[in-house]
Length: 554
Image (tube, rainbow, N blue to C red; front, side, top):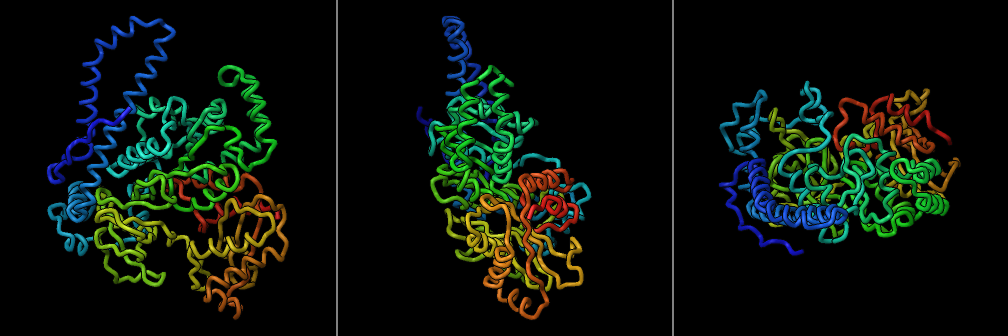
């Protein structure tokens, strides 16, 4: 079924707030449906009862697909117009932020001048803002999904792009979410079930969601909130495979499916590599939400359980909101457009891997290709200009807005003697080391500075590194030493400190299965835990580090 004609390009200056636009659109669709009710009722009565449900489901899917196509086309045209005039769009986003301000700087709501805005609102770090916001509005812990124009665009445009790249994914029963939270930033409960989701996300137990997905061999898309959580799902599937097979055979839930239970057992017997495609032969794509610290999980899934499948993330999200849109599912993953609407985004230049205090922010249209910037978001409720710590590199442009890839998080650096080992640098060193461990595949890792665990014992401060692996059950001393050598190769400063004995050798510990799942559960239980749950690579709290320390096996 083809898409309806594209609506005319709206005048950006006369647009009502996004929420009002959406409400108007839904009202028009509701009126159209009401006009169709009388003829639909006549057709309904003429059909046999057995055919009514199938006919209704087909009609529901066609209406939902047409609605998605129309609304996504409207959003894409709106996005194209705003990115063509990025400065004007950002001015409008700033005006919206200032109008909603209720913080100590709320008198600024009368101005939209960028220079005045910068002069009156100093930059703050995410940790500072978290302490200052007693209600935690900047980094919400109770909100499960994001709201705002960017999150709506990410969901609608992501669904439309997914439907275009994989036309059968949104067919009835084609998609299943195996985590309580959805990877889509803005839940659409009125649309997703009609577009083929086998199980709607919500407050459900992960095992029940997995059972529902396992009972549907025709799945074409598998969804999870993040790649790290999907890694936990597959690890649990291997550990509890027999219990799951027994539940399916016994009909818990639903009708007994002994044949499907036998297929599950057979698939598990062949090991983790390619397991997803053996369970769901028609599976095409894995959908997860990109957030900090997910690259290792994506790599592990792609090399083992989800081998041969495409990965798609509709957006990049941080604790401050959706900041990047993925418009190109056919391109290599990890490229995102920074949209010019709310939240209001600024870019702070990063010099030589260190942040200059006196540096001034630039707007999206002023970003330079090849340069690295730290993201700065303005919270519209308290008017806080917050440096998120997420560093991006500009790799291209879409109209006047930058296309970026996320490089690292500044808060995830290791430094016991001022050596400043950044997240991407440590990951490179660890990847080199694991590549020298025969048969090993890295699944997860986290680091702790020795002072957190009081593990120096009179020796020089050092790093405690916890790793989860496949294919290697014990770490020899020779293997452990390789990480320290690789760190010296990527960081001359670290090599110098090691030579003079100011920093001790990194200590590597292998943890058992489920250790990082337990860590993620502990993180989710923290009141300050943001959504999406970013995976920390450097732990700053002892009780979190002890979650891994208790699970060391080698």
